[in-house]
Image 1 (cartoon, helix red, strand yellow):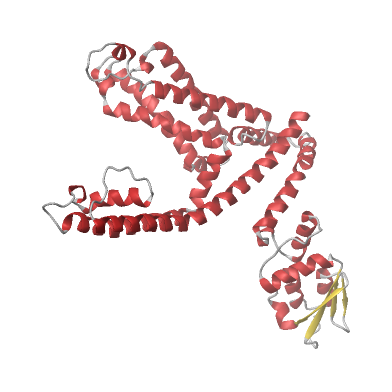
Image 2: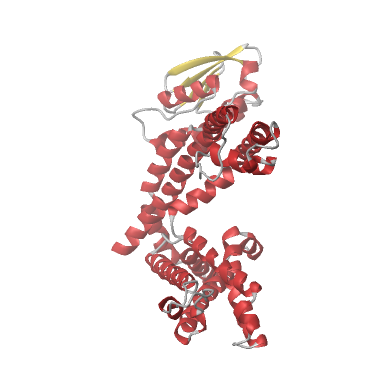
Length: 423
């Protein structure tokens, strides 16, 4: 830049902008800030398309309207896509001037993701033709990557969808078997003898044992294959869904081991508390459905991003429980120990009434009988509605954002899947 001039002129597609040289040093657009550090005309021409030394004017053969929106971002800190302009073209302008897609507002990011997902199928076809020219080591890595996507991403291919459907069927069968194992014995139900109900041990029967073994075998094989084809084995072990898979599979093998050690008809196996707890841990199989359903994935991602709001919600509830619980115990029982309401004899008991009142559940098992207690109950209900609504608003907006992000990510894979099915 010419040091004798106090200002420089930026000419973008015919639109001229004048800036002081000290402003150019820390300008938000990185390409313009690089002009301040240029010591020679050769370095300047590496940044811009042309340069007029006499007027200290820099020429850029770029889109003038798009640069106008980038200037609005430099002034106000908010960046939106230019109307009547392709999102990809505007994104190219952003990259040229030194900005990333993260600088865009969320609504414009969503439009850019939609447009980029439209071009995904075309590039995947080119990658398919280039795959045949890769060396053998690269082809082996490509095959492992395809296997990983088949097991980890249910919408990545037709085979992945078939595999996901089979896995869902096994999960449903396992849940049905677990529920059936807790049904009362039919023979006990038919007899009129009043005695303690015996639970049906369906899994001890041959046909149920076979079905359970097949389901466990499928889950075990799936987990082992996913571990083998994973990129990072340590990261695979630390993932929450993989830990849940391990918790769902392990009880079966522990149960089989204890059966072999203690005997199939022993009283320990029939009434052992440990085995019953381990058997109920198979309910974690339901969480495996999060791999295949967008709604469960959205819920998990929302809870992970909104843990601060969840903690805030718990703090609100705990503070309200402490205040209203102490006041309810005082008004209903503490002022008159002889004829007071015995259901509010302690603050912990009153806290149970507070929580069911704040959440507007109202089981009716305990309620205030004095006039001050009923007034306090009304205040408790109203304050519960207000306190619960405050953080839930943030959680709702985060849920919508997570849903759109996962939906766009799934849409890209779905377009690739449609092209693969047609081919």
